[in-house]
Length: 136
Image (cartoon, rainbow, N blue to C red):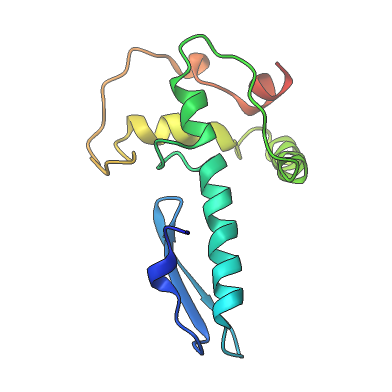
C-alpha cells in the first residue's frame, strides 16, 4: 500500500501530494482515474525511495550516511537521469550539481526543516562534486 493512499480521489483533474521535501500538484484537463492516480503516486514513492534526502530509508540517505563510502546500485531508470545531470553539470560549468543536498543541509534545509545553519568544519573543496563522485 502506498503512503499516498489517502490522497486518491476519483474524478478529480488535480492531484496534490508531498514529495522531495515540497508539495506537488498535477493538473489535467480530464479527471484522473483512481488507477492512474495510484500509478502516479506509486512512481513518486519509487522515486523517493531512491532519491529523496528527506526519507531516512532512501538510497540517497544510505549513501550520505555511509561512513566509508561504497558502491550503491541504482534502478535501471537512473541512467537517463544521470546522463541529464552529466550534461547540465558540463554546460553550466558545475553550477548544476545534484550533490548540493549536503550544502542545503548545512544551511538548515534538511528533513527536519530546522532552517538554522549548522556550523561546519568542511571546506568547499571538500564537498562532494558530481563529476568527481560520478566517476569514482
